[in-house]
Amino acid sequence: MLEGWIGDDYLIFFDPSDEAPLATDQYRMDDALPGFSVVGLRGWDDLIVVDESGATHTTPSVPIGPEWLAEYELPTPDALEPDARFTGRIKWYVKPLEFGGSPSDDENIAWITHAEHRELVRFWNNTYRHLERDGA
Image (cartoon, rainbow, N blue to C red; front, side, top):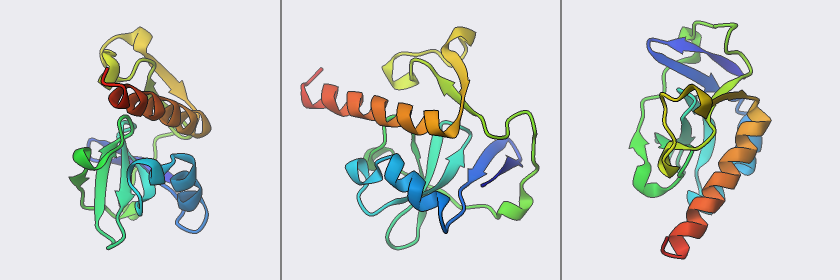
């Protein structure tokens, strides 16, 4: 895993041989974006994903879906400027923005591990799909 700043973006790149396939599985990409692979995170809020043709996109981590895909030019990891303050940690909104959480409320911000992030992304995306399905 490589992580650090490129300009104003904090980026995390998963190792393509082992971390990216594991992240793709653990984020349950086939539930929302079949055929896409997770290759990293952008700014803690967005997943960096690659489609079957090799095109790179971002999607919010909550909710994940084709309607939120944005084209993204993947920068070279060599340009990363490491920042020890954030290594191994992800900024998470306790109540995600899609559910009315505030990005400026300090009580809505937690610093979590990558494993916790994957678990929370699965939980909130399942909740989002359930509410959408039930018309809430």
